[in-house]
Amino acid sequence: MDSAPALALLLSGDPALYGIAALSLKVSLSAVVIASLLGMPLGAALAIGRIPGRALLTVLINACMGLPPVVVGLAVFLLLSRSGPLGALGLLFTPAAMVIAQAILVTPIIAGLTRQVIEDLWTEYRDEFAAMHIGPVRRAAALLWDARFSLVTTWLAGFGRAAAEVGAVMIVGGNIDGFTRTMTTAIALETSKGDLPLAMGLGLLLIAIVLIVNALAWGVRRLGERFAG
Amino acid sequence: MRAPDSGLPILFDRVSLRAGETAILRDVSLSLAPGAPTVLIGPNGAGKTSLIRIAMGLQKPSGGSISWGGRPAPPPGRLAIVFQRPVMLRRSVRANIAFALAGQGLSRTERHARVARLLDLAALGGLADRPARRLSGGEQQRLALARALAREPEALFLDEPANNLDPAATKSVEALIRNAAASGIKIVMTTHDLGQARRLGGEIIFLAGGQLLERAPADRFFAAPATEKAAAFLRGDIVE
Image 1 (tube, rainbow over the protein chains, first blue to last red):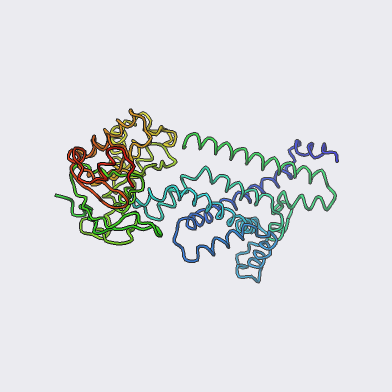
Image 2 (cartoon, chains in turn brown, red):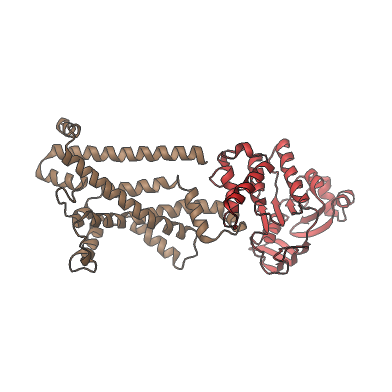
């Protein structure tokens, strides 16, 4: 397959193509931010807290790390559809619905991986914090802060999941041109239509974005390790 | 006169500690009160570390009772400990000390001033912004001491404070301990280094096999130990 048309399309600065890329980034990054706000404290609480049913919750979260995107998409669709419990919000087939669906997919990944990172650090810090009489909230905050560079990997895993998924955003976003079309849904659509240069161009762009985000995260982590120990 | 929320004296009344079938401490009764540094010595497995962990309230005894200034639990912030392998938070040297001071009701200015004073005390002023984990063993130990002293405790427990340090680092750590003791902080420490026990100890507690076998002023203990096991330990014999 000749990839020259795809590259030409990429280099032409096609506004439609870059608009799709911008929306994809916006949706996935928003989902990762929301999932981090929910998942990181939850992961830390599971690592250090004396929560009733902690083992069950841990198993549940670990299981949810592999949630099928189409199932999440269907669940969010039912919630947001006009007859659903949140239908009055009018969010179905909007970028907000896509963010919600992706946040649901990413939260267990961030919570599960955060739990592992914090649990390891907690083993090291436990006695010191007990001797200092540090309360549970400050404990969790300090552990999350000290593990911040290790947690970059957690965010990357979450971002990778969000950026690559197609099933959930297709169902709740509707793949509406210029409004809810993301790179993954556009690739699926253009491939089915036979417009392979656009599909390939989007594919290359998606891979480039994932590479750049990973490289940036790696750089941040290395710098952090150098300057924060 | 101690403060009203004083954790001293710490009273052990027939304290024992078991790990499964193994007795780690057996019927230990003692009082740790303000005064000269108390040094715990004895062979490996004698129960020294367990004793100071129980005294800090970090471990519950299996039997007997313990009280802190007449209370059943240690008052927060009045006791501090430096572990054998102190944990360095993944932050700068300055932030490690500041962490111990957070939530103490100090103003920002007071906190900064106290951190600066402790950095000077531990001779770490020039390394204040360096990641704590990048420090040498001796520097880490001095930082751990400065962090433990940050809340101005009335008693400081030290578990092998100069373990694996070179002579220069040991000297600087011992100077800090002397300084703390001179400021009125009760020092309770374990050591394998008999020279260090002679240099720092006001009184010696000798433990073997989980039992407190002897307690005496340091000069008397080293001149004429009262028990055969202590005498054998000082001779360098293997004591169980």
